[in-house]
Image 1: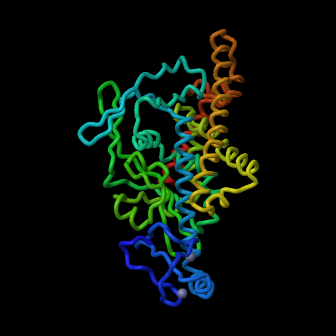
Image 2: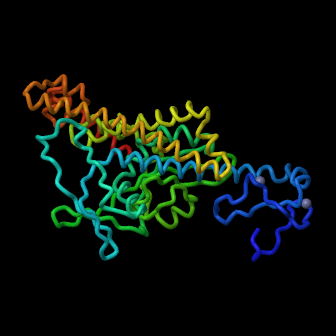
Image 3: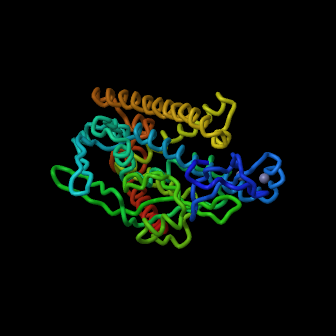
Length: 381
Ligand SMILES: [Zn+2]
Ligand SMILES: [Zn+2]
């Protein structure tokens, strides 16, 4: 209650109110801003409960969904920072664009395994946290949908009843990131992967967009009507086949492909398992759950979320460390000429077709696989 607005009236008796319902106050807006419900006394609040109950529950769930979105987005940023796959040496803002100058990548022959696809994110290229978020999510919407899937599936079903993965073409981007390789600009207009969810016991639909920062869409949860009206140029029709978990399934299939991008998926698949472990570990240590965390009062929520994020980061970075050590072992063996196919397979590695063939697949298998994958992809489209 601030001094500029007229004093609120009690929702039950219309007398001058003294407090708002603390469960549902300051809920984020859906199509219209949500109003707080005020009472003159706890007695009036009690007497009004049957009337207020339904709306209160919806607003509480909505508040929790927005918090869940914040948390998931933050976890995705932490994950991307650890599992980064590009080399940027300079970031430049010019003509309304954000130019990402690519650095040098090691030659393929020097790569010991899929791990060499990881390049540490260089925090010195950006100082602004929003710029950083844009870079971390650049071309990573498929990763967000796929590798965050288990966590999303763990957190959101308490709050949402329907899930739909979607691919859309974006419009009205607020940021335009452009990759620059050897002085040449490469602009992209790729499909953007998002998740559409329906809030439990309501008619409210939301878009969960964990990788929207690359377009300047920094809010992880946006009412679907608003998102689709403002940001979506067209939907990519999947003939109703876009089930929850499909993005992950497609990338896991892709990880079997004897190409570098396949290796990147394989690596992400392995490391992303540790996101869930980080959460489980935190829950066990605090005798708490994420759902419990989401329902806390604002101050406590803010205090505790940092601990959760730090724990997830710890697990992911430990996993990256172990994988890196494995890479070093293999690199040393390669240098000594003591590598065989079994080692490569054990390291979860396939640099190219030849390695895969050496690892047990013959040319026909590879071809059949590629065909099956392409069919699968066209189903998906
Ligand atoms: Zn009253
Ligand atoms: Zn309420």
